[in-house]
Image 1 (cartoon, rainbow, N blue to C red):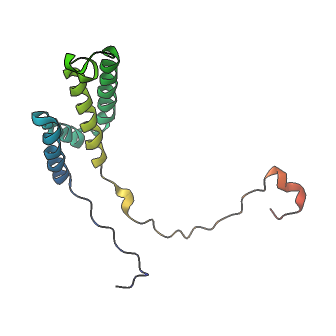
Image 2: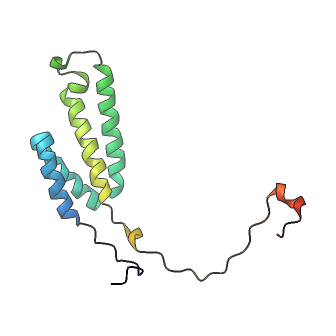
Image 3: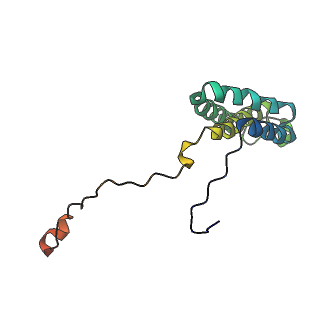
Length: 133
């Protein structure tokens, strides 16, 4: 192939492959809570617009739980180390990662535009210099 010609972009991985991969990685991180990934992927498929508010609310809740329990020792399982904060952080993380799988139609190269261009008007400081408009 001619190196000067634009090369085609590789296809994106499908949502099923991404769901399985993220679930497996989530299982290493969170154990059985990785089952949240397929549930969020199904939600992304049906109602993609809900993922951002879910991620925001979950991460805000995790931050509030961490702030309330600030200063507690790690062994107390409160604050950032408590179950509620950890669960909310995982929900926010997985919802944010699943939301990336939205279909991206912008990967196609833009068509060549044949529309005529016009000159921009001069800036106020350039008006007295005799430059063409």
